[in-house]
Image (cartoon, one colour):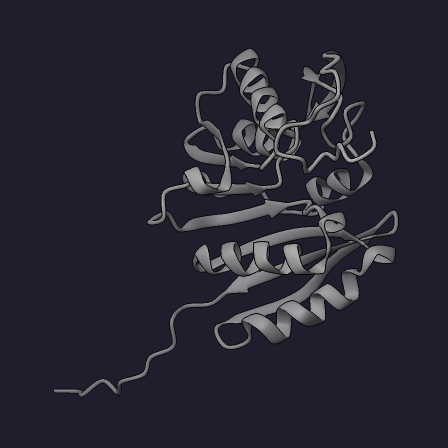
Length: 213
């Protein structure tokens, strides 16, 4: 694809729409994918590991799929939590169009497929689920996580899947050092060469003593 990456905002390659059979949220489904997006022929191994090693999503509230691609995580969450509002976020406009097509085809009206800047600033997320685009480079990846992890609601979790050979352990150390007070980071699961990292945002610590009557 030359310089045309799945994290390009507007892929220049021909769209080449295709229909793919996948298993999401325990169901066999047909989805539409295309060239110029991540893993257009299947649910990739990392996403499969993430989906198999995360708890059911919260039944309501706002949920973020960061780097959604054609939508396997967002669609799974929306199917499992029909009363939640799912934000499928990506810079790739083609990917966002595919998420919209797939959500409509599956009868899901609780999915918002948008660019990062289109997410309202006042939303706090009950959970974040992400197979982040590691290949954008450390600087971009760290900036992405610094932007979105602090938007977790209190006592809520982010779940990230990262390939071991692409720096999952160093990313875990960086997150533990970067978010520090008020957060905890640990490896929740491993499988097929991937790590599932859990970031927990704890409640705001009490800074003023309570005066008892």
